[in-house]
Image (tube, rainbow, N blue to C red):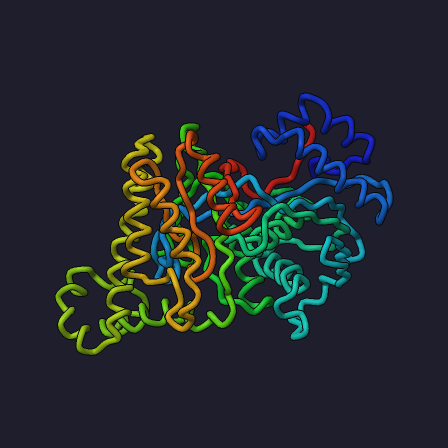
Length: 429
């Protein structure tokens, strides 16, 4: 197996060298020097706990959804990108089958040779570690223990999917320590989804893990959920004239479970009228031909959400082409159409059960006021009380950030850089 682990002195020399900074620039762009300091600070914390034996650096990025809002659960298409905000592990393999890990949230010590789900671990990191190990073995790969210190700059609650990043990180660790890095990125993503579904107890889709694991900008077609079609776009970012950013509108997420569940539930109810499980299997002509009956049958909101699905599923293809062609005016127009469809048809901008919660709508209104005919804005992710995404001309970036900060508070606005690499193990070049 390739040599992955080196002691602290070797890493200090490498990360401060031009070769090391070049390797970090691949992941973080202009932030390479700051990341070198972050890596070494994390390494010193690891050494304080586990001693100065050879260790490795592994990371997995957060992700941003570019198009395909609420299409994946209907086996539709999505467009997403890995971002240069990640979860970093300083880690080394452990021969005894135990995972000993610490971060700012506490300590973990579990035996991953114990494959049984532990009910007390549901919704906890331990469940994800155990689930990844079992998922590895279920596919015929090796899994084992490791010692690790984790540090993250993926903000929780930002819509950048820190949960998928940590699942991909655990898969990346076991891939490189026990399988020579030979497991491909889509499989690592599927193993992460398995861990979240079966062990963590959350019935998530696959978009987040796939985006984090593959890296770059990807279009994903979930028509065959067992073998989704994943395509890396020829471009690895946005033109320098634009800044892509996420704004956390800091709304109240409490008691929104039913609001989220109603979206796939109502879409599936429309599909069931045609004897299908999901909308991807329903022809558009058949759908529009049946509108009188669907309208009478209700609920009519489900019909509108189905119209959103059909339009958004096609829009993904056109937005991907616009990015690859460098046609930002077409991309901007399509991004606005995506946001408009989510607002009017999907209706995931504000909860109907909480009349006082309109943070996402306020963020979109402010974006429209500031960006007018120069940028674009849309809801990001699940919706109702979360984040928005904005495409901001670089010349307007400072003013946009200042206004969002004034309204929603310090640290609400995150400029995003596309990371061309997914789950990654740093090695000497």
